Every structure is written in structure tokens, then in C-alpha cells.
Length: 349
Ligand code: B12
Image: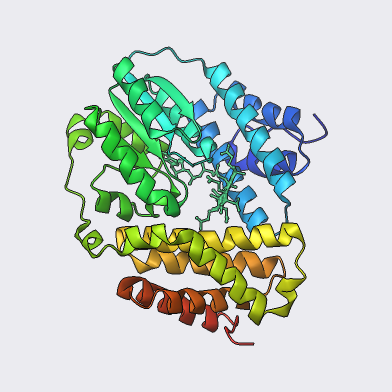
């Protein structure tokens, strides 16, 4: 390690640790973490007060376009190495039942779930970490083979909530109590409450929850009566057609799109898809904030990459016209359109 001083407190070590991520220096990053452990800082604090906030900061820097995707990937790889090093150093032995920790199908944010898994392990549970994007059928067959005290499901992106719900239901049919966590359920867990599933805001709360039999087995009913209007299911069926027509509309109204490189076209198609997927998830939980918060985020990301965010307003208009017979979707799109217009990204040329 360089001239960096090794601190004995996570807050003091944090700036140096971030520097290690910035320089993609994994040996130095591991050394910062192990120095804290050697100085007597509990492993749980190293994970939650050093690794977790640094990862969140990595995301902010990526979002502001200060860090490339490659820098973000390098930093995430280092965080994974550090988590492994902390886990090896602490080396706890299980004294309690088995908890299965898994990410929802299509969910690649495995590191937050891994942090939760390690904290549960440090608290004496025997943890099986299944990692990113676990298909529901595989998870269920795993649960049938091993006797689990509970299964903890992670979801970082709200657009995955409809899948999350299916996965929760599938686990319950195997008679295993489910708890959930991750940013995808909303900062305050409001979408977990709506789906009728116990939620924990962070790893220590997850550890408290699995130890609380009553809270773990409480299954308030899901509040999804609004799905009877079929808007969610119909929107999902029309996904491909909506993306194709939105791209054609952009080509017509924004001349620059006609000259896009294949890579630019790819990311435009992805963004058009995310708009449909977040809209569908908002319909699923009947909460416009899921969609408006996403739209604000998208405008911010595009603006920081010098992509004309005005295109978002045009696409919201276009989807609004295509979905004239969808009153709930129309309302969400209109609210988002007003927000986008207010952000300075005017929907008209
Ligand atoms: C690393 C990262 C990735 C990596 C993940 C690699 C990995 N092995 O994990 C990769 C490159 C795969 C990735 C991909 C994407 N990402 Co990303 N990613 C991140 C990043 C930078 C860090 C995630 C992290 O580790 N956070 C640190 C953890 C500790 O924080 P946390 O999530 O809040 O976790 C705590 C609690 O929420 C809770 N918790 C979390 N999970 C669970 C689970 C359970 C069961 C429980 C009980 C509790 C719990 O406990 C944790 C610790 O206390 C975040 C930024 C951020 N601010 O988090 C973006 C972020 C989550 N990603 C984002 C996006 C948009 C994407 C992509 C769509 C990007 C793209 N265009 O391709 C894809 C989607 C991939 C997919 N389908 O899943 C956005 C989401 C925005 C939104 N509006 O939803 C974020 C917020 C970045 C940003 N600032 O815009 N990403």
C-alpha cells in the first residue's frame, strides 16, 4: 500500500478507501478493510459503514457521468473482493437455521444482497447465497430440497416488482416465510407493504426480522384490486409494439436520431423499454411516484450525458397517445410529462 494511512475507524478510513476504488487498487482496498478488522472494528461495521456507502457513492458518480461504466464495474469487483476478505477474516460458525438469500429473476445487483447475506452469517445464521438473477423455478426446487427457516429476496429496481411478486408467491407455496429488501421496494418499503410481504430497510433490520417469528410469519393481504382493470397485463402485451412505434416517432421528430450510431440506437431502445417497464410496474402497484421518480432519474442521467432529455417528453407524449384507452397509465404519463417540461426539457421542438 502507498503512503495512505490505515485508519482504525470506518468513517476515517472511508476517503482513503474511495481513493482505492477510484484507482482500481484492490490490494490497497482489501488492506484498508483488514486493517479495520485488525484494529478491532466488528466485521459488520466494516461491511455497512465502509463497503456499502462506498458502493452507493460509486453509483452517484456513474449517474453524474463522472465515472465510466468500466470504472463502476472495476469498483464493484473490488467491493466484492473486500466483502470476501472480510467474510474470510471473520469466519463465523453457524449456530442457527438456514436462510436462503437470492436476487429476483432479472436482478443483477447481487452485492447489496451479498452484504445482507454476510451480516446474517455474522449473526450466526447458516446462509446460502444464491446470487444474481435466480429463476423462480430454480429457487423453489432449491427450497424443496433444503429446509430453510426463511428466504430473503432482493430487488434493486422497482421495474422488477411484478416479477418480485410472482417470486414471493412461489416461495410461499413452498411454505417458506419470505422477507424482502432493496431499493426496488421504495425507500420506506411501501411497495413491499402493498405486496403484503415483510420488508427490511437494511441488513441489521433483516437480521432482527428473521429472528422475530411473529413478524416473519405475518402475511397481510396484498392490495392489488386495481389490477382488475387489466391495464398492467395489456401494457405488457403491447411492450414491443410500443417501443417500435416510439422509435419511429423519435426518428420523425428528432432528426439527429436518424444519424445515431448502432450503440446510440441500442441505448435509445433500452431507454424506451425502461419507460414501458417502469410504467408497467407503476400500474402494478398503482403508484404514480414509481413512474415520476424514474422519469426524473432518466432525465438527470440523459442530461449528464448530453443526450437531449427533450426526447423523454416526446416519448411520454407518444405513449400517452398510444395508450388513450388506459386511464391510469394516461394519468401517470401526464404527471411525468409535466415534470419533464418543468425540468427545462421541453417536449416540443
Ligand atoms: C453496482 C451497481 C450495478 C452493478 C451490480 C453488480 C453487483 N454485483 O451487484 C451492475 C453493473 C450489474 C448494475 C446494473 C444496472 N444498474 Co445498477 N447500480 C449499482 C450501484 C452503483 C451499487 C449497488 C450497491 O451495491 N449499492 C450498495 C448497497 C449496499 O446499497 P443498497 O442497495 O441500498 O442496500 C442496502 C439496503 O437497500 C438493504 N438491502 C439491499 N438488498 C437487500 C435485500 C434484502 C433481502 C434485504 C432484507 C435488504 C436489502 O440492505 C443493504 C445494506 O444495508 C447502484 C447505486 C447505488 N446507489 O446503490 C446502481 C443502481 C442501483 N443501478 C441502477 C441502474 C439503472 C442499473 C441498470 C438499469 C443500468 C443499465 N442501464 O444497464 C442495470 C440493471 C441491471 C439489472 N437488471 O439488475 C440505478 C437504479 C435507478 C432506478 N431508478 O431504479 C442505480 C441506483 C444507479 C443510479 N444512481 O442511477 N448496477
